[in-house]
Amino acid sequence: MDKKTQALVEQYAKSLVEIAIEKDSLAELQSETEVLLSVFEETNLANFLSSLVVSRDEKVKLVRLLQESSSVYMNNFLEVILQNEREAFLKDILEGVQKDFVIATNQHDIVVTTAVALTDEQKERILALVAEKFGVKAGKLVENIDESILGGFIINVNNKVIDTSIRRQLQTFKMNLK
Image 1 (cartoon, rainbow, N blue to C red):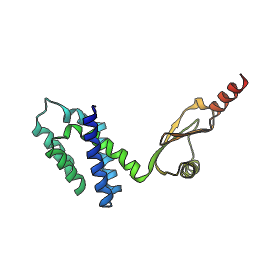
Image 2 (cartoon, one colour):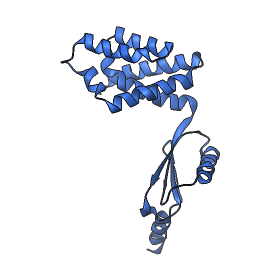
Image 3 (spheres, rainbow, N blue to C red):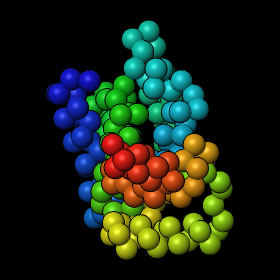
Image 4 (cartoon, one colour):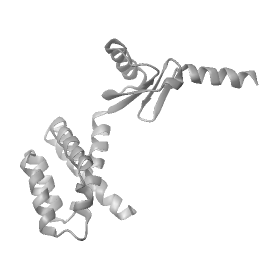
């Protein structure tokens, strides 16, 4: 994506997030954005909307279908997208909206990698640890199981990492022996 298109996408995303904040509809629009992005992921919708072979009328009909199950603010947003003929960028715009929502709400996804599955109590303790150490609200807790870390855990939040894995400790010990 070139810089001009990127700027366009960012401006549309920023506008929807500003409306969500102004109208106190962050949670609702964040949920709708996730649903629409899941539709894009489960279907070939992005390719359909950006295709030069598909007629503009067909694209409009499809976006109108998305409007049927959306809130007033999302409907208005989608209408602006249609009026300005930006439907080819809709997926990119929605991904930008999602990123801007994360920044606006300070709710970052927490990726936890462990050797074994976490219990509910451990998940709660990790959420508390993240809130304390990183000062962020928990978005989704994404749990990865990687037996190669041997034990401990690795937490990734907003490009910050806590690595207490046995594998890392052994690597550090090995480096210190050299």
